[in-house]
Image (cartoon, rainbow, N blue to C red; front, side, top):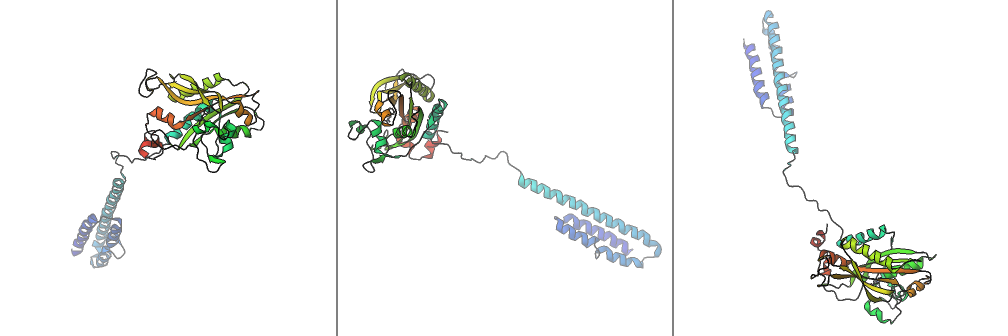
Length: 344
Ligand code: PHE
């Protein structure tokens, strides 16, 4: 009788024990404790010898059933543990979709670069090439070949940083035009724009900077006229300041162009009615232009009897300031990221 009780006891103990097991390792230990070779049942098997013969089969069967029951407890517990593991993993990996997102800061190009690219797009679309040149220039290309011989009074219009007597920081991007015409050995047509940094000896204030950006355009061909220049200027004004813009040309003077003009656009702020941006006139001056002076063509090897050209030049900062109502040119150079970010 003791043997039957022992069997029940093992079952009961195993059940209680197994239900408390919380991980697979301990579960395997429990399995060998109860069902292994040296487990609880091996002892019972030994004691079975003391049973009368006719009881042995029945007891043997009960033992087997007890083993099956314990195995079932173990498998049941194994399932529970595995389920709990999966749940835990899922909990740890859940994504809280209500959490605020991470703010990835995406940069943007500088406003001056944006305007430069906008202008380049327009001119490339009209068949121009973009040309660049050095910022340290020789006097000959910056001035002399542009009809500005040494001691010419118009040199005062562009106060210059000289490096030596003959080298300087370029005061405009016009020397790139000279270089392009000189490089053009077969003296064929030219159609270029020249963006870049230029330097002048100005005291920095809200509207002056000793370094700023220019974009100039040059067309040289055998049938270039003032009306081509006008059409180009109008396209430029509309591209930069909107389809409604009109232009007005006023006579002016530049040594490198003849005739020379100052170009006004109808005010984009008041549509020409008069406001504080156009100082009540309805017009805003945006750039200088003209027909290329014969002396300039000849100095770069072009026959001025056969070729004519037009040129225009604008300050990129000025255009940006007008377009976006920026009232201090220094804002472009002080690298305040908050300024830059406004022009995404
Ligand atoms: N190079 C001139 C300047 O910087 C601008 C300009 C270019 C004017 C072409 C007329 C024609 O002042």
